[in-house]
Amino acid sequence: MRYAFLLPLAAATALLLATPVRAQQSEADRAQQWFLQHDRNHDGYITLDEVMGYETKVFQRMDQQGNGRLREDEYCAGIPQTNTAEIDHCHTLFTKIDKDGDAYITLDEIQAYYGTLLQAADTDHDGRVSLQEFLAIAGQP
Image (cartoon, rainbow, N blue to C red):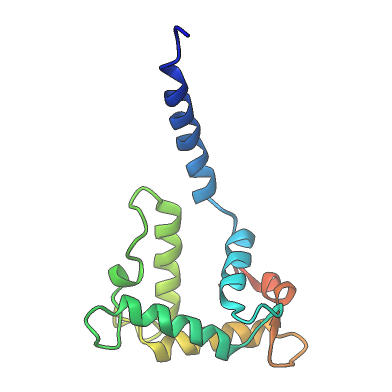
């Protein structure tokens, strides 16, 4: 095999070409993934309690200083700098959550944001949001 050295190069190239496609996921894909992460009991619905249980754990892991608030760089930490789509999405989300504009978000602000979002999604007003209800509002400001 004269060109055997090309096989690893071809595999690496294929991986690099596939990575941007995955990084540039659609809003619907991102919303579905978010929904599945937050549906902690896997019943096909999310509630504010479920969402906040998950978000509180994530928040506490990110709050390295233990001061009960996060800067944008803390909130968006771990996103590779080359993934500009995710960085932009994280910046936009941080800005939406930071209602008082003080450049920090708290658990109260996160709860207020997701409470409003879930209330808007809960079209049948049963206190829980299905994937279909959530996808219907995904990507709205």
